[in-house]
Length: 599
Image (tube, rainbow, N blue to C red; front, side, top):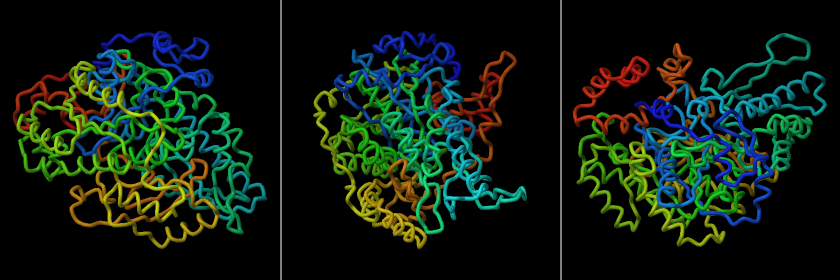
């Protein structure tokens, strides 16, 4: 069965039952249908004296086009912990419509390790991302309205962008105010994808509704004729923006296919934002279960770094264990093997690609002082010799390894991983004594260099002339002592997505610095990264449809990330082209587009 068919064939528990199992009061649950609900913020307030559970952070090697299955492992681990008698809960991010209709697909797991209802979570869910989009664009409208009616604040330069939660490269740079109306001056503007909006970051870092409103008011929307910042508070905009977000700030409760509770809330991308679910959701999950599994976006150099250097400073909690997800095929890909050859045994390429995994292990241990476990998503074409080679390499690093089979077996396939993670967690000291890659007192340039050197393995950063000017302005405004959030490609430790090996000295090129006073960090744009992605040549949107029974088809674009593990495990080891063609003879018409697109 396809992922969507698996999800539809599983009987879910009513969301009130999931909430009741966690001890959430009935009056604190706001159902959105049968299987999803909002949790009132009062529930967290009532649990303040409850001891936190153990925090498990799931990250990965640098991702590849083959997919590593980080979310699937997170879900499988939560189910696996339940299988060994532990009370666990998930705290994940919400999917963005950009990837859903683009290339990457949804973010609800795969196979028998999914959160559900899958289609609803991947699409409109409870409307959180729409609320963020509306709040962002309300602020844009208020800026231009203020200028239209006299510009009393003497706004000279507008830096605030509009947003939409879709991939649309045409909107990266636009001209607005072209109607020719009196007092309407044309100006250059642009759009970010919603998950890159500062409001998304604010929602995810706010501690409560009061903090949310304060942060919204602190947003710098531009500068006046004297070069001083103009804020959303100056426009009296934070109140109405908070109203639009008053429900969006409440965490969302759903469940896995095995009925493990899952709180899914917030969704910033890790390559262009801080890449973690909300502080409120994580705090709540820590109070509701003994083991909280949360996920940071993309590779450990992006998601885990930003969790540990940005979110952790607000959360005031250090992970008791970090799980690094990898696949043998992805390690071979990092070792120089082409995509179509990754199923072939290649010990030398595995050893070369292992350096990427080793780099992330070293960063977790040496820079952040947290204990990693490696979860290997297993495929049937992984040979015994490759598995043994990888195990020996990890033994030399004194790191535990577990073969994860959650896609085919659900929680039963991650019991070994769960046992190893629980053992580390139970030994850990929950006292908050963190190590960071930099200190807040460091200069902006020092912070950027420390992340580049310690986390990425680069020689140093290189600032563009524009970035140098922006750095001086940020320092002059008094905002030097806040975290940095480096936006770069996820595919490489460097800022060049083609440089997979990173075996030659390299620098991190910072082309722009953007002050995000509401979020409380400085975004550093590195390399060619964009804050508004574009669609691929054949977007998933071309294949998503509603059938004659009103059911959605084609929504889970799984063949880059999940297909390799989904069907490969059930077919003989033969050439990849034959495999796709053979599958084409057995798939029904609803999903036949998958193999055709892959070919």
